[in-house]
Length: 253
Image (cartoon, rainbow, N blue to C red; front, side, top):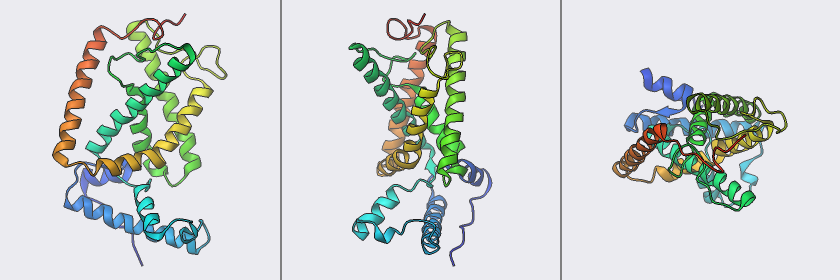
């Protein structure tokens, strides 16, 4: 009978168990991940036998391809620090593309959305990492995870709006007039979008991105992350003194 693998010791075990974060990708960590994956496969097979989930043998996909896809889309996996850093920028970039595209479609004008100047909106990246790590213990309960995503993203968006407005006197978004808005900082429509996007991120995008990231050579990955962090810090420092503002960005009455 397969038993749950023995956890890593010390701070490494705490971060993996509670937040799904791997401090490093050493031999012990890799062996833990393999053992944990085998345990989860056994648990899934046990649920199939007990009739608690749809039998994977009935999927209309060839067996080897099915195994490959299931391994790639494992939502219970743990993530290395470097993978999380790169996913922060990926999700921040996706958020920037989303906001820019919406403005382009609705107003027909390209606007560099956000307080920073680079092609990223860190609130999306921060939200992605928060729900991926803080909700690690709830990934096996999708309905509860969805509700908690709404809570986490709602708090993050409200506090971000509040702090940015208090520090600069400017608003980068305003939901006044939207259904179920709170002080124009959050609204039901926005939270629903974050909830759906968050579920996609946890259960599909993050596992897929991590699978791709793991194929990058460690030295190259660290170099990419370090470069992105350097540029991001420079952008953040400059934007602190000269925020990206103007028409289509902060022109809210």
